[in-house]
Image (cartoon, rainbow, N blue to C red; front, side, top):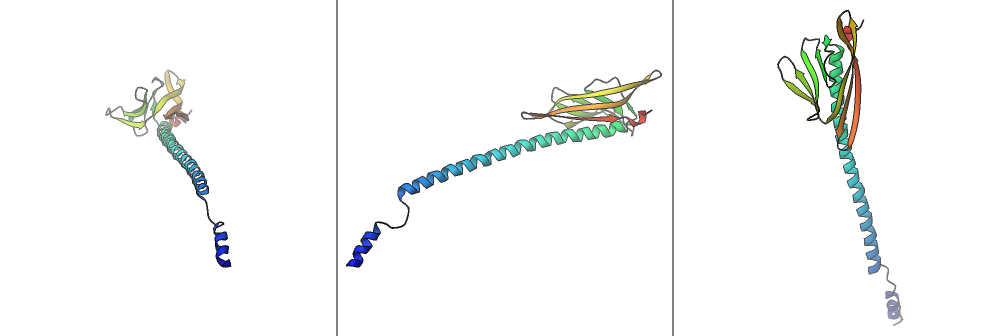
Length: 171
């Protein structure tokens, strides 16, 4: 009988969690999981925005590389073209124009011989071609061209610049 009383007395102190303790731990776990989910969601959004900015800037850099490469080896550059255009004769003899269209925020490569145009870069908010000229006798020629292109992705805007010296005109 003594053994039975001992079991009854110890039954009161069984190890385990009460319902209140379980509810509190469940609430704390839920709060932690919500915080982790919010942080993960912010991380995914940030990654997506950074990826868009990277693509946009990378397209602008590739366009600038193409333009500067052709300018460096150009036979002639038109000194009278406007600041949003750069017309040139390539070393292959192609008559081309790089043209920024502010209406649709796009940079184009225009083949002046065939009239075909090719899209080089989207999301361009501003672009300028600054031509440095010199005069030899009565002939005005372009010595160098400075290019500035501003691209946008969402709220972010970045400006990328380059310059090219026309090597055929070095004197």
